Image (cartoon, rainbow, N blue to C red):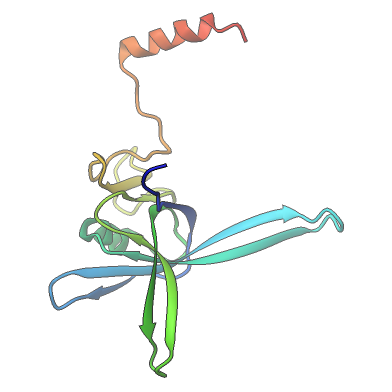
Length: 166
């Protein structure tokens, strides 16, 4: 198989408000933590159990960063799509450290607000989606929402579904 894929998709809740750091060159990074929780019923005890994983999210794309800064708050539910990156650094005690983060950059990154109505949103704008790369356009509809079909397309879909014997 030629090539490789580095793609992370997470749905979770923000653990803290996004933090914006600006660079001397005019760029910025928006950082926050995202919690994903698995729950299951223990087979032995019948007790409900949960496990929460914390993910460090870094947004380097300017447009996605603006959206995160403006609309995201602690506790907000979001869908994100990015890539894993591991970086090394020296901490304040001069120890070498490694951290793995989910990074949203200019291409192939997506941020979808999954909570209810945003402050100031008009009717029908309960959710917002912002993405970069691969032909997606800033401000397109959420991937969780169905796009309205063309008038003729819906009728042809009905005909096809009627012919399926199961």
